Amino acid sequence: MKKKIRLRINGKKVEAEVPTNRLLIDFLRYDQGLTGTKEGCSVGVCGACTVLMDGQMVSSCLALAVFADGHDLTTVEGLAKDGELHPVQKSFIQYGGFQCGICTPGQVVAAKALLEEIPKPNEEQIKEWMMGNLCRCTGYYKIIESVQKAHQFAK
Amino acid sequence: MIPFEYRTPKSLKEVHADLRKFGTDAKLIAGGTALVIMMKQRLVRPSCLISLRAVRGLNSIAEKDGGLKIGGLATHREVETSSLVRRRVPLLAETYRHVATIRVRNMATVGGGLAHADPNQDPAPTLIALGATVKVSSAAGSRVIPIEEFFTDYYETVLKPEEIITEIYVPKLPANSGAAFLKFLPRTADDYATVSAAAVVTLDRSKKTFADVRIALGSVGTTPIRAREAEAVLRGQPVKPDALREAAEKAKAAVDPISDFRGSSAYKKEMAGVFVRRALEKALAGVTAKKAKAKTGRPAPRRRKR
Image 1 (cartoon, chains in turn yellow, purple):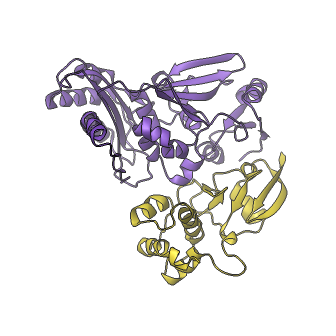
Image 2: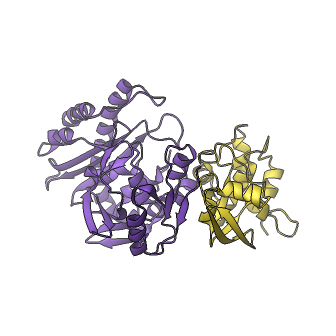
């Protein structure tokens, strides 16, 4: 069974016919070719699949693609503008906020959402916000530092 | 996931019509954070999903008779961050803040969480202690159910296949009341509780005697549990540490936890007593704290999560 959906992905209008049982993450990765979003635990715990729906963090592994109908999605591919990285991305590079990198798209997208709500978050606010984004390399100190200093790269 | 028909009703009336038409083959879906996992694992295999995501007017949070009326489609995050909830029933905002992570709370709805009826969830014990009610409706009409009578077993409730949760009502606390929810989390901050306990205490005018007490626990049985015998020990009695300990003992007798990776049955039972006592102590401290706050007019300091 299929359903037609209309949405925006990273600012671009998209129309697609998707099977009703298609997960949002599979729609993004396999139908749209946006493989920046990763699948980790598949049960909404690890945060690797974090995308923004109307600016709010959601687990794309727990959402159906049809949930996105009429909504505005942001994936990690949508952060850089005109070839220039987002301040959060610059900060993660500058302060070494990643090791193996698998969790990084989710971390970066979650951090972007945080900075939209709290431009200069303190450590406690970062920890509470990012609690659901796991890093199995356990590079948490560097991640916290990268998020905390991201405002330096904002224009 | 097996294929399914996906319905997108726009109003409660259309939801009722879909429920009547598809009945037991259908599942309602809102945030999907619980149901999608169960469908992926093929524990639930509905041939039709009735999405509530386009239904309007069921996510409002408003004041009613001094208490709070919360639409079934309000998200956990909306309850947690609502200034009205924080002002009127701060414990409710605090309890919803304990659920999983922000990402899940952005999607999971109040009604969906209750209908899912996992006894490990956080909100139910607090809602039971606060004396909340659930309003459900179908094409045939609506009914109001005290929340402690809502759950019947693991993932089972009194909801009929054609019914939907439309509203939760949380009454105003009487004067001289304090409320607390404690979640015992020895593993990770986003885990289900090993044991959770909620307590609401109301003292008489002298503030030396319990006028009323409500105690509820989570993660220690097939449903959230109201510890009535523990309450009975305190009601009408003077506020004394010995009485709290006696109530904690009664609470231990009311629970029947399973052994799992969060702890053995015996350990959880022991912790149920400990956390009921601490919840009562915290609720009692809240009765006096409220008075101090009124005096200085300062807002209460923001609580740290962990």
